[in-house]
Every structure is written in structure tokens, then in C-alpha cells.
Amino acid sequence: MNEQLLAGFVMKVQGVGKWIHKLTCSLGCKQPFVLQPKNYSFMFWKKMFLVGLTGGIASGKSTVAAVFRELGCPVVDADQIARQIVEPDSPAYWAIVRSFGEEILLEDKKINREKLGNIIFTDGEKRQLLNSITHPEIHKAMLKQIFKYFIQGYRYVILDVPLLFETNKLAKFMKHTVVVYCDPQAQLTRLMKRNSLTQAEAERRIGAQMPLEQKRKLANHVIDNSGDSVSTYRQVCKLHSQLEDSLDFLAVRLLAVVTLTGIGGLLCILIKRCIF
Image (cartoon, rainbow, N blue to C red; front, side):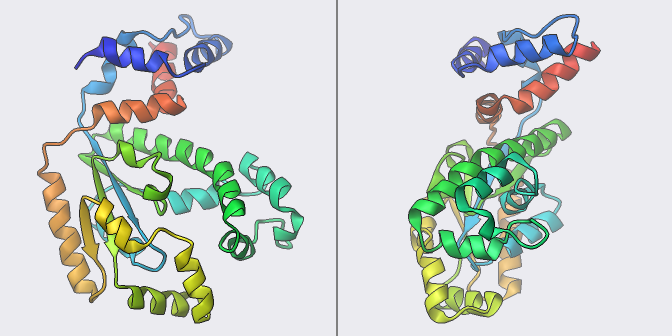
């Protein structure tokens, strides 16, 4: 692998090198870090690739993710991270309150997710505004988890991302993409029952997302969750076996994710420089 080429890519990430150098100086490291090709050589002793898992609202994506976990696969859950990064007093929390007003808060000052959801599902501009606030923070938190699994030597990591194809910022780093599909009527019925919605409300929420049929065409793999749980489980097991036996590697893509945010590489580099 051409480390000179990779280092050139790193240096194009504006401000990352200077930020890391300044931070290592402030931490009192004996040898402050400067971006050089040799600093990334440690990243290629393991082989791992990323698998993007997505679907539509009430299509069964969480069920499929649970099966992957049961099979021993690490799963990075964007929805779970999204809840964590908007906890009170976090940067994203205050940005959302400034943008949407205090009327979206509960009595305990936490964000009323249902009320905020009703706003963004009926207003495309508000939905884009919320995404612009939360997505950068979500990506940083996801990166930290990816890097942890990378160091631990996992064969592949599942990234559970509802808007994988809509945003397209993460999709380009995935070696495989998996869509959890179900027929439109099953999706509508499940959503109405799960969220206690009227048909009109459920249809509006489904309509706010990219159609499952379109996602199905974009994905490398499809898990059809229209049937029973046994059928879904078998499909996931089969896909897991295929991925485990795959010879696809994603060192370059992982490095790109790391350098774009600067966090994963920063953690490992700081440990290396400060301890050794």
C-alpha cells in the first residue's frame, strides 16, 4: 500500500495537522506530532471492512441488527448515538434548542423527541436543519466506535444508519451495503401499530424518507423482512457467512473516515507519542 499517497490525502484535510500538533504540544508530549507517512503505518497491520445497514421506518432494521449482534458482529448504532449526543448541556442539544425553541423541551429539560419528530417530518427545511446539527456529532461518535473495533481486530463492522443513502456521506466508505426491505403494506401496518399513528400520519412519515424500493436498488444485499422472523434470521445468517468469508478489505476507506474527522487517528497517535 502506498503510504506516501495516503499521507498526501491526509495533508489535504484542512487544519487537521496543525490542530493535532497544537494539541500534542498542549498535552506536554516530548515529541509533538507532525503528520508524516510513517505515522499511519500502524493502521495497516489489521484488515477490516465496513458494512452499512439501512432500511425504512418500521421495516425491521433493528431486528436485523439484533441478529448480527447475536452472531457476534460489532454494530455501531447511529440512532442510539443520536440520542446520546443530544443529552442536556451537550453542544448539539443547545444548537437544537436555539434553532427550534424551548417549546420542544420536556419538563426535565430533555428534548421531546416525539414533538421534534412531528416538526421535522412535516417540514423538509427543518429536517435538513436538524440533520446539519446532529450528523457531524453522530459521525464523530461513530468513528470512535469504529476505531475501537478496528484495534480489536474484528473482520467487519456493521454501521446501522437509517439515512445511509439519503446523506451519502458515509455510503462511499462502505464495502457492502445492506437494506432491510418489507412490502409497503406491511411497513404501513407495522408503523401504525408501533407508534399508535393514524394511516395519514404513518403515510406522511414514510413519505418523508427515500422509498424502500429505491434503497433496495442501491444496496449490494437485501434482507426481505416481509415474512416471518425465522426467514429473516436465516437470511442474516447466510449474509454473515458470506461477509466472514469475503476477501474484501477496507484499510484505505477506514483511514479516510479517520482523517476526515481527525479523532480516531488522534487518539492512537497521542497514545503512541505520549507513552512511547
